[in-house]
Length: 214
Image (cartoon, rainbow, N blue to C red):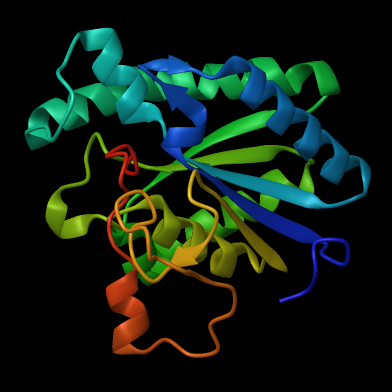
C-alpha cells in the first residue's frame, strides 16, 4: 500500500473505545477526527470511515447492562445507536462542507457477487460525489453466522471493495502486541509483520474493552 501522503483513497476504521465512553460520545475526540478528515479531503483524497459505536451508544440509551448481550438485545441496541452514530458524524463534518452517507452491510453483501457489485457501485458513486461514507455492519439483521465478527475485518473488506490505497485502524491499543499490554507487563509491540503465521494469529486476541463490535 502507498503511504498516507501518496494515497488517493483512504479507509479509516474507528473503534468504539475511542468514540464512546460510558455510553456517551467523546465529542472533542470526534471533532478532532472531523478536522483530520477535512484535511484529507482538502488534499484531494477520497475518504471512507468504518465506524463502530452503534451498540455502545444504543445499550446506554436503552439502559442495558455492560457485558455480553443476547443477540436480540444487541440488535435492538444497534438499531437505536446507529441513528445517533450517523447523526453525530453528520453534525461534525457538515461545518466543513462535507456530506456523509450511512452504509450498512453484512457478510452476505461480500459473499454474494451481485450484492458485492451493487455495494461497490454505491460506494464508488458516493466517493465520486465527494461524500464520506460511514460504514458499519448491519447488526440489526446480522446473526452470528453472517457476521464479519469485528470492524477490523469489515474495514479490510471495504478497503478492498473500494480499491483503497491506505487502510488506517484507529484503536485504543497502539499496535499488535505479543500479549495483552493491559494485563501482561512483558507484552512487546510488534512493529512489522511480513507474514501471517499461526503464532501471529494467536497474538491477535479480542479487544479488552468489550466495545469492539458494532
